[in-house]
Structure formats: C-alpha cells, structure tokens
Length: 350
Ligand code: NAD
Ligand code: DAU
Image (cartoon, rainbow, N blue to C red; front, side):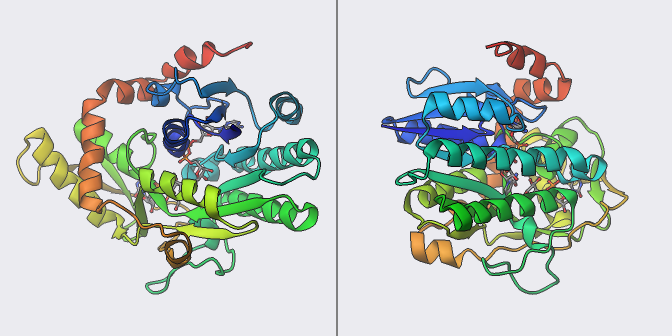
C-alpha cells in the first residue's frame, strides 16, 4: 500500500492525475490536497469522490505549519506536486501571489518531506510538475530540450523556474528523491475558462467576442491533458532520481489558426452557418512580455520511457468542445462565482 499526496488535485490537470491514479491503482491511497482557490473545483472529481482509496484535504501549501502537521500525521510515501497559481495574465497583475504559492508553497512541501522522511528516501519520491515556460521563448526555429537554459519572462514562469531550482537543490543538497517534468500547453475537459481554449469555447457559445492577443501569431504546442496525466504516471513510476523530462504534443498551432479551427468546430456543433463564429474574433492589446513560441522536444521521454501522445489535435479539440457543451452546468457554475462557496464551505473547519 502506497500513500500518495497529490497537491492541486482539484484543478484542471490535477483532477485528471487524481482520477488516473485512483482508478488505475486501487492499492494506493490517494490524498488530494487543495486550497480550492478560484481554480480548484471538487466538481471536477465527483466520479471518484466516493472511491475507497481517495480522500480530500482542504489545505494551503503556503502554510508551513499545516504542511508539517499533515506530513507528520499522514506518513506519505510520495508527493506529486501540481498546486500552483497557473495563469500568466494573473501573474502580470499580481506577481507576489505567484511567488508565495509557487515558490514558498513548494519549499514548504520540500521541507516537510525532508523533515518527515528523515533521510530515508527509499521509495519516497517528490515529483514536481512544471512548465515549458521556464525555458523562455523560441523564435521561428528550434525546440526546448531538457538541457535548454532557463530564461523565464513572465512572473508566472519566473516563479515556476524558481520552484524547479529549489526542487533540484533539495535533490543535490539533501539527497531527496526528486523528479521534474516540464510540459507544454494542455487542453481538455475541466479547464478553467480563463485560459485560451475554454474561454474561446465559452465566448463563442454565448456569442461574445473572442479576444486574440496581438496579431494572434504566437505559437503554442498543445497536449491532450489525459496524455499529460499518463506521462506523469510513467515518469513517477519509472524515472531515475534527479531526472527531468519534457512533455509535449509535437503539435504547434498559431493562436489565430487554432481559434479559426475552433470556430469551425463550434459552427458545426451549434448548427451555425460556416463562418458565423469566426465573426466573434476580436484582436485586442497584446499580453505584456508575450512569449512568441513554445515547442517541446519530448524525445527523451519517448525513447527512455516509451511515452507518446495518443490523440490527434482535431479529434481532441472536438472532444473538448463536446465536453463543454454537455457540461453546461459546470461551465455556468465556475463562471458564476458561486461554486467556490458551495464546494469549499463543506470543508471549512475540518
Ligand atoms: P489550475 O490553476 O487549474 O489548478 C491549480 C490547483 O492548485 C487548483 O486546484 C488550486 O485550488 C490549487 N492551489 C492553488 N494555490 C494553492 C495553495 N496555496 N495551496 C493548495 N492548493 C492550491 O492549474 P493547472 O493548469 O491544472 O496546472 C497544474 C500544474 O501544472 C501547475 O503547477 C502548472 O504550473 C503546471 N502546468 C500547467 C500547464 C497547463 O497547460 N495548464 C502546463 C504545464 C504545467
Ligand atoms: O506552456 C504551458 C503553460 O500553458 C502553462 O504553464 C500555464 O499554466 C498555462 O496557463 C499555459 O500558459 P499560456 O499563457 O500559454 O496559456 P493561455 O491559455 O493563457 O494562452 C495561450 C495563448 O493564447 C497565449 O499565446 C496567449 C493567447 N491568448 C490567451 C488568452 C487567455 C489570447 O490570445 N487570448 C486570450 O484571451
């Protein structure tokens, strides 16, 4: 029996990781720790919430005392750490929140792991989930590999880069068994509608403008979120200590091309005339410091751990649109602002 702490499990990627581990490893106990910020939503996990090997703990990783007490009482075997402030635009308006959660929160977890595992790191692993944004921006050519130098530009990516450095420092200094993965842009179900794809789906559905930053020429490398969760599973179980893996879809899209494809899919699904949804495209002021292009070279993961992305983008995007159209209530709840009080309050003072 393994007891695994997954942080940020009520968020977009975390909920897919929790679901995968709860369903695929009935002999593991999965403890999902989440603060339930605006981005955390227990409605993402209703299908596993009553599983005997799943438990939710509402807690804040920035609270060092709470983290120490939790590690002392729970005796975790391993940690998969996803909890973070994740939205670049928010980091531009409030960078400090990103330092506190992404840097100090991560260090609190590292300290708790070091303290309570007491140097016995055999089969005790700290897996840190990070982003390709730590590598900065690419021009027209090239891809990020695991040896690309860090060059973060946004406060979000600077905070993630910093947390990656701390994780490596705890491996190198204290011998903690750490692994890190840096992944490209994810898409799929349960994605909070402030990020490009779910925001655009929601706006197109409601006949609202679809904001495209700058000229829409920035490029992102999109990966199906369940493929990311599978990569995390493989790396968690098979990577050698201290290793880093890049995870990506080999699936680069200019934002404007992606939005046009999405508009076509939405026209078909909503029975609109061809070209109707594209009329909603609205060019707006560019994001400050907007990274031009991300592209991940995941050869190391493919060669060493035999992982490949499973889903073609067009199919994944159509599945994603279907999910949002059939889960209207989820979308309305998370955009109404009331859902947190409903879900989070159940766990207050527990
Ligand atoms: P998200 O914003 O959807 O979810 C983050 C979760 O962390 C939420 O449930 C939130 O409540 C929780 N959280 C935030 N602050 C917390 C705190 N102080 N204590 C406890 N819980 C807290 O984010 P996501 O898109 O699912 O990203 C998850 C992780 O993956 C992040 O570390 C992010 O940097 C990384 N990542 C994301 C992407 C992507 O495309 N979304 C790509 C690569 C890496
Ligand atoms: O690359 C991995 C990263 O991908 C993750 O680490 C981040 O947590 C995640 O949020 C994502 O960051 P991006 O900034 O790339 O994602 P976002 O969905 O915010 O934007 C995608 C692209 O679309 C980006 O070039 C900015 C642009 N954009 C975004 C929004 C929200 C628009 O043109 N209009 C918009 O309204």
